[in-house]
Length: 83
Image (tube, rainbow, N blue to C red; front, side, top):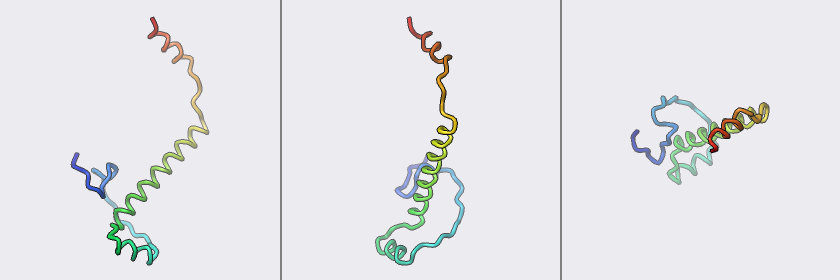
């Protein structure tokens, strides 16, 4: 795996990029340019964070909809290791 740059995360390695367009408040864009913020990298990072958060919410919702139940098999399996 290649070394990761400061604007590249593990999610981006080996993935195909897709060009997209979005609108950004003009003053925010101007501030970003003055502060040398890489808007594309910031947008990628923001979308990646939003996707991770959405996946976590979906995982939690799925768990709440069908929580794990105790399984007697594992109680017996744990006992096998005891001597």
